[in-house]
Image (tube, rainbow, N blue to C red; front, top):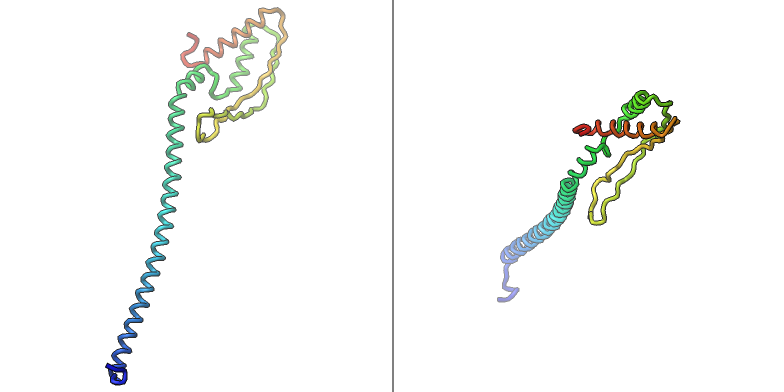
Length: 174
């Protein structure tokens, strides 16, 4: 069959079929690039989700490590707290105890100076991978000055102070 044998109607049929073919190719191309865009967005979303999951897993691991550290050292902390080495600072009670010691032992006035409260960051051991929040130790320096009539004043004051400190500990002076 020759092109010259095609009639006008054959060209119209061929034209519509070519237009349908080109339209189909255009639609398929649009679907292809649309799916490619959706796939890239899904991949970005997957990467973001994995990153968020990894961050959450690291935070959970850190919490578990801190919990293990707390469990490991809670007994020692309780011992230090019971011995009044750590705990809340009661400056008024501190001053009242000195006044009581002076009165009970009939001593000359006791002079003292309490420095402002300082903070020291407790270093973590080297084997701790990701330390959490820093442990801050608050402390105040105290300077005590007292005129002594004889050496018994010093020992009486020391024993009285130890007595107050032990009595303040949980369980009292046993």
